[in-house]
Length: 186
Image 1 (spheres, helix red, strand yellow):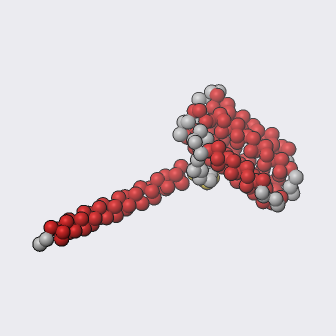
Image 2: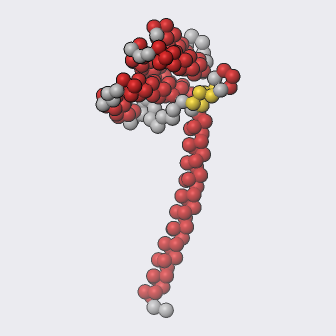
């Protein structure tokens, strides 16, 4: 057999081995991805009273990460081009839920440097959402009040992750108090 044919056979064999290895790695990657995504979905479930879960939206970028400022910039741009009243209310509610989810995940992962800032950001978005709801119908105000009640359950769980009267405990309690004050204005 000529040398050229042996080299070609050898290269073909190596390519087949590498392809099989990539297939196995791809399978492992897919299985791990499914497991990790399942953990993230379960991680965003907060059990309320009566074991009825409140599902928080998943967030890909948390405060303190490099891409977070770009995420916020995109959110502000999207809000600027949302013109209908209903669209603005819905988007502000979605942003408020994202801030709650971020706060819960930051507290749960004990990222101390981002907890207080996340709590402040949640309170700010609650105020922005409440301003929009104050101009809305009584039905929407009632829905917002019920929504705030659900959020207070999640915030209580965040608060209880920390020792009583610690800075992080107080930040979460302040968010609960903020929701109470805003609800009273509806």
